[in-house]
Image (cartoon, rainbow, N blue to C red; front, top):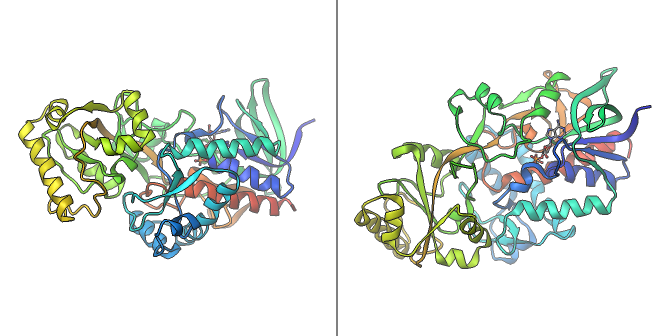
Length: 448
Ligand code: ADP
């Protein structure tokens, strides 16, 4: 006989585990199915932070003039006004609660003073030691899932959503022992995006052929196909984000926080070419106009001393140490006079608190403490903003914009929250906020 659960959660990233933990705490019997041999998906790789407006930590840090409304306005602008207003309102009003929930689970998060691209207030949160947010996020969620005895099965790939009388009735799953059916009253799709599925990326955005990807190999868009097969509609599916600071040879991502903390970008000629704090799409586009479509991200020792993530980039060989400005020029292969002039301009801009060249709004450091650390970077496929259409309760909608009974979705598999461009730090906010919502909605749906 087939197994049964109240709720099957497909995917064990930040969205899936936030959903599973929430539904379990409501008393639902939950099974989490994960196709990979490890849990955590792309969430494991999340480097930046978690945006939230109005957290206790943000206020304690002296940022008292932020609000969900300003968070909303920044995100709507950054998303080219394509964001679904109701979903964005839900995100911006609930992210602070989501961050405080993570703290209650034991996350060692602090508020961070740097501002990411497209943010008018410092609203990032993440590990206090500056290490990547994803590892701490998944540590906390993984430990809580263990404590709650959540039945999480690795190497279990969901291949079909089973419907009966117009309602979700379970899933078909490929396990190491063969195909199985699990009966369930509700299914939460938390399968992540499709940034590692080059065919699917090319289908929706032919010009991205050949781009490297920062995504884990499981980000193949399965949930989008599974949902389509049961009549779900899709939102903004062609909206794919490229990230401007990716290492070409292996797709390794250098976090946007390196710029937020004070790094700048030079082109192959040794010249700055952009306000480094613009949104990812704009910085990427500006970078692609430079010789070879590449840039050099430069940070200095003042960041290195404080930032664990940067130290790991250097120890992994992703960023190279340059003892002097002349060494930076050598690594880039540019005229040392031009590179020196770029630094001089920047130092002057810092001293005058005004960047005449590109209008960079914030220079948190002077960028003059040798040694410098430099990476050659290029745009790479990073995030798929589009996906399954949901409403603010995380119910999956069909083409008539009606909920498909028993089907919920959260995280990168969904579309609409981020519009045409995702702001850095909003993915973790999204997956935890909508993960919790999907868990609550599914629990209510199954009568818990
Ligand atoms: P999010 O950030 O939205 O939580 P992640 O990429 O972190 O997304 O997590 C999604 C997880 O879903 C990944 O671990 C991925 O391997 C898993 N996954 C994707 N497709 C399937 C599938 N068909 N069956 C089971 N798990 C899946």
